[in-house]
Length: 398
Image (cartoon, rainbow, N blue to C red; front, side, top):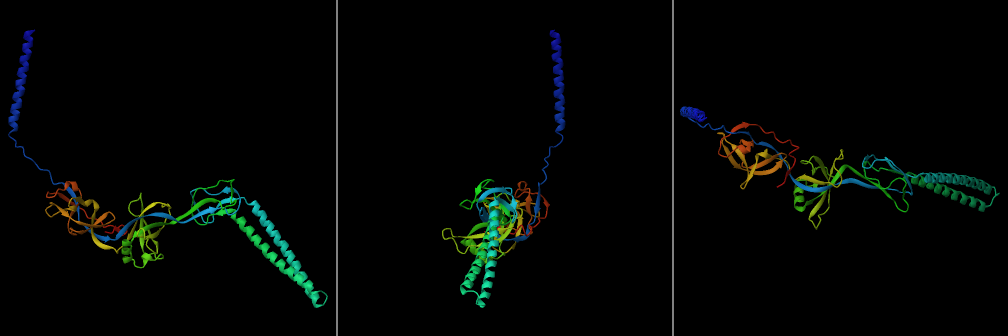
């Protein structure tokens, strides 16, 4: 047993010694090849030159939307509400029947008024006949003047009665028409305030529902005295003329990017509010899809100057530090340089640059984190596209 164990230990020692010898020779052989460092290539970045495009300074304001018309539908005659002929919240057309009030009472009154007209006309015809007959007899000295005067009075009285009864027919027809409550204009109907079976119009003109016209729709906002003078400088006549269509206004809701709705100035107040120093303005916007509801918070912009040409670069190409805004410029040796710039008003997804940049400069527009000032990069040139004129129609006035 002891000999067997010693024999196994000897074999393990010889195997270990062989392994160490092999590793030693491998290490010596590896020292013959030099270990050289290969630097990585310069990082790739996308560079572009600024483009020239129009920029229009504008004022950014806030306001609220309001229906162009708001009407309370009321019961103008007394009766039981029989039918409701619309769905709450739907768009109703002008003249559409919305509510029907009990009609039988007013139909009977109309028949009674028409019957009275017939009776009064018969009385008038009789009076005219008698007046003509007695007038003839008077000429023959066969009748007294008092008889002629009496039938003259009866004729005139009958004529007045006919006129009164005809007026009662018109009144009865009008009251009958009031049993049909129709939409005065095309708009969105609110919820009904009375259910069928309720007595309405008893002693008061009961409100049945409300209807709003929201196509087009208004947006009310205020402007300060300083900004008002700036707007008037560009639109001398339009800024205070409520009938001019020449002052464009752009609107955006809180869930929308930019200002997708374009309208025009519709009304300007005639004096400043002395407590706030602001002037009330109103703009009107098309709303064919009814996406803008009354009472919404609205962002608005109003141009204050004509469009001017400026250098435009992507907003993503601008960095900011303690020294202010800057861009990374790549020179002809592909070296990165930090360049301080002075930004102007934005134009859509672009930013105008008023100082620090030339149209011939190449700036990094993608890969800014890989571009280190003073280091070399691998530039990939890519031209920029100028913002469409519609997108650059407004930039905040500075």
